[in-house]
Image (tube, rainbow, N blue to C red; front, top):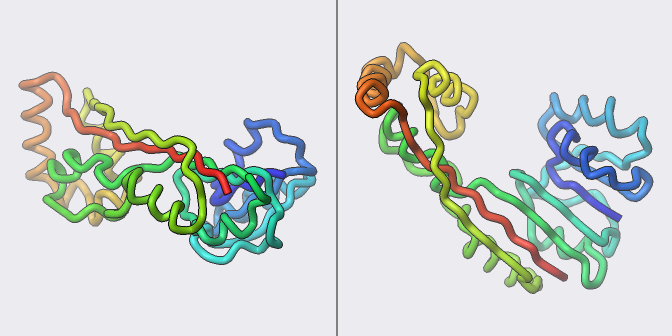
Length: 199
């Protein structure tokens, strides 16, 4: 039995090709909830609207595997719904994701998710009773060769670039264009980590 917490639109879950009758998913963002109802329920996948960081609408010891990709989660609830020796796998966006780009286009702001570090999250899972089987963290470069692409990127990530707009941030965009002309690209870094834990 597999549970995908914060499944989004369900696309990644479906790409796993797990037997539908053994698959469940949760999602709380209203447009994605409707999409999941249309895509997942007709296939026989058990779908419930639920906040990944809150109480999960499933019985104790229901799942062999719980996955979560870039979503919220509650280690205590995941421990509860997993069967004995069950596995939890997550890949997450870290606290330092895109920070150089945010400072370039906006200003120096505190990260929106300051606790998103592999060790901190692993400790939370250990405290909930899990054994950490593997964890890894990486910081990789991200480059933009066009200011329009960078502007679009900032517009679609309002939690990282709050109140960003061309009008509000014109001076910073002009400075970014100068960097682009001098260097040929604008570079930041992505921050990702994954954790593999066992009940």
